[in-house]
Image (tube, rainbow, N blue to C red; front, side):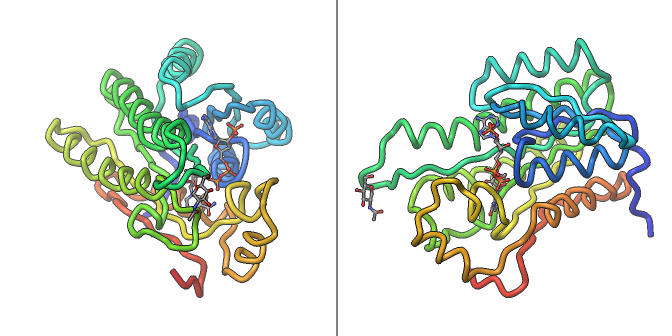
Amino acid sequence: MVLSMDRWVGKVAIVTGASSGIGAAIAYALVEKGLTVLGIARGAERIEERAKQLSDKKGKLHAIKADFSKEEDILKTFKWAKDNLEPVHILVNNAGRGAKANLTEGETRQWKKVFNLNVLGLSIATREAVKVMKENKINGHIIHMNSIAGHQVLNFEVPSVYSASKFAVTALTETLRQELNQQGLKIKVTSVSPGLVESEMTNLHPNLTPEMKAVYEKMPILQSEDIADGVVYALSTPEHVQVHELTIKPIGEKV
Ligand SMILES: NC(=O)c1ccc[n+]([C@@H]2O[C@H](COP(=O)([O-])OP(=O)(O)OC[C@H]3O[C@@H](n4cnc5c(N)ncnc54)[C@H](OP(=O)(O)O)[C@@H]3O)[C@@H](O)[C@H]2O)c1
Ligand SMILES: *[C@@H]1O[C@H](CO)[C@@H](O)[C@H](O)[C@H]1NC(C)=O
């Protein structure tokens, strides 16, 4: 067994969308492993609450209020991290969203929200993290929270641009891998693609319609912790091993 989180102990990780669901589980797992985690969300109060509960753990959780669909917020966050913490070693681009806006009648404004966060926010944060890693000669790790919807169009979801935005994440993962290779950098990039996960994006959404609730109840589902386990696995591999794509489905998933 060569898996180990030892080299990350005491290092800084940025986790976006850390206030709920998958991001909260990842932040928790990394703090337990002894990392200093900078958790990002628009509603950062929820991260502050969790930080208090984690005060007896090996690592530490900081909360930052930021909207990662906005470039100025992303730049401010990296500036804060630079001024206040050790250099960033890990970036988990987890914040993501869908929209109720189909392609035939949906609003452009809603489509933009999805691309601004899932594609542009992820790309801007990645660029800023790579900059820090290069400056400090860090063999860091960038993790993109993708989805099975980033590899196939699922026909049970609200038809929208969500799947297209996740297909972009699949392409951005491989493009980044190639770019890092061309520059001889040993920064890793991993796409994690979950199937259905219990979260506020899915069956725990506060505005869930009875119809969607019934759909979700029939489907096998993962817990956020299952995805956090996958992230810890990818991070634990030896320096020469890159988990490029990690697909995690609940057993029995139909799609
Ligand atoms: N749940 C699933 O079945 C599933 C499956 C495959 C992939 N995924 C992906 O997994 C990731 C996490 O989803 P989840 O299911 O854990 O959803 P969730 O419970 O709704 O959590 C989303 C998180 O992102 C934050 N967020 C949303 N918009 C943001 C913004 N503009 N700037 C900063 N943070 C923002 C939210 O906090 P605030 O609202 O306070 O900002 C929250 O912390 C997403 O990328 C999603 O596409 C989910
Ligand atoms: C597409 O969106 C419009 C406007 O929101 C809505 O009225 C319509 O029912 C939707 N169509 C489908 C197939 O979801």
